[in-house]
Image (cartoon, rainbow, N blue to C red; front, top):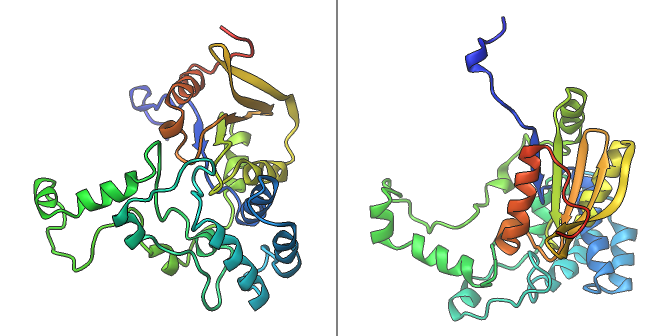
Length: 274
């Protein structure tokens, strides 16, 4: 039975930003991106390539050791914007969470290896510290009618629920394929200085789809400046946003607005200056 016309949804499509699309290619891309941006050494990259197989559910102890060394680097620089300063606020250093791999982990749950989304940063690298402190104030929680049950622990940006999540999907690529087959437009965008879910991972994932390229890698413009690059496939568009980290709108609000406007209007991003 078809829904009446007044109940139809004017669905413009799906636009996805800096998201993990496929666990295996995600983790491989994280390593290659860090190596290509001079964050890790040749030796560490080679060890990870040698001892880790991200298509397997279980990893060797040597893989764990290598991955611990890898994520130790992101204890001293910002993973969400590799060129941003780190927060040196005194409160932040006391609450900073180390990314370490202990015991047997399942790499198919990407957050296990990376401690994904433990903090958020923007132009102010201490932003997540400030918001976490603010939202744990009793008067703020009372004003928001939050924590009415009196939980015995502090609120934080992301919980450890991923450690107990057992029904995750290792890849959303089959869903993207179904959307494309159904004639639904899909745009995927990525900030190019994000080390958390880097552009390299997204490119590896999209290559897995085997889509036909209809317009290859070309620049798009935000006024007189290159806003990033874009590639068009059959019913899928991939866009990079130059100089943006994780949470692209936080780092590049003007480019992000332009991106969303063109997506909703079903128009290509400008390929010349304006």
